[in-house]
Length: 218
View (cartoon, helix red, strand yellow):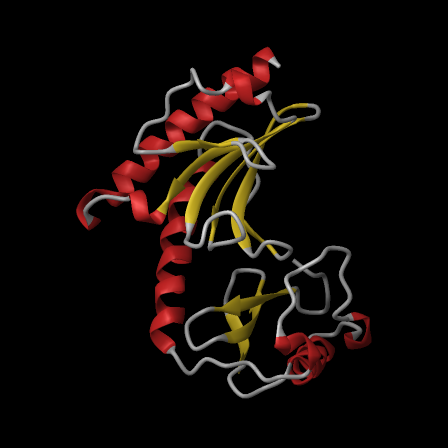
């Protein structure tokens, strides 16, 4: 949340591909459709809305301290939302994922609110286990590891690969060991629609239990 005369946050909407300015209680204040627009036009719109809300719009920039995959939009091409079915599918994944992850933040564990992490464009909550020991529980929409959405649980510090194989995972989850260590449930491993929520929750429960044990022993 960004403090101003009217506190606000800036978000993205997958359906119809747009930006939204929302109030402290998540009430939409303004929306901007991105199809056919450039990233510079989007930046200028955000700056204008920030100014209207009482903040310094010039402080909003496109600079960041992380790397994202190269895309033509970054060098002046306009956004393309001409295949709405793809964005609708992404919205379903993010909406259902946020609901499941949100239930974790209401449990007894000290979990952060569910956030979208821009360097990976995933949604996740972070659970503090002890100083320097955390769990990241989230939904990735697809990346260089899996060309599909997947739920995951990752640990910091990461355990040795040799220690995870004896830890069972439910819900058809698997252990991931390439470049990072964690539990993964890919979308293609989900069963019938009527049982997907239960399967996902079983996977996350088992992955969290296994990860907690690994962090305790680490």
